[in-house]
Length: 280
Image (cartoon, rainbow, N blue to C red; front, side):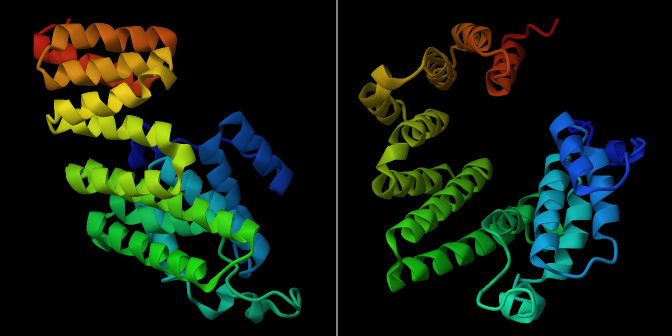
């Protein structure tokens, strides 16, 4: 269903079990995601804004994006504006939350809000998403500058990292490879524990723009720490950069043998076959 897009997904209707949060969790666990979206419609129908309903909305938006129901997500997300409506703060719900202050919007919701324009040109597309993402980065940086207890500081750094990874992915996906590489270098600087996966992403981007030397140099620094699957993938990307599609295909095929769920390897292997004229 997720490959067929929004129209196909909307045509699929299934019988729902009784509406309850426990049954909702069961549907998600079973992978019946469209049914879960339909149940969330019932759970959220006429529900007032609260900490509880925000959790349900977060799940709903996550499922809508996963199912590629972007136009539905866009219409429904619009009612949250820039996430600064008065009923999105604990102070508005003082009767239930006497001492808490600040926004009731969780980080996962904010991240979904920031990346949604990538799939919706009518709300800005890439530049709309980057505007939202960098706005969130600014607020996280302000929180870090203000000083936080260690545990909170580490949580904010984790949020910032996840957001910058999304920014780098958006840039790379739009063809802005050099800005994406520059951003990944920044992530390596303040999150050294992510050095391996970030370096791996940088290697592939270097190969993508034909900078074999930098890709090889960085690969030499981390080669011994890579899994067999990662080594095969990097070898495949390097050979594609050299235009050696037959050899590249062999590496992607071996990566799929190691991990049959590696769709990136499968797609790149198919691209190699396409260049080789092997369409049968």
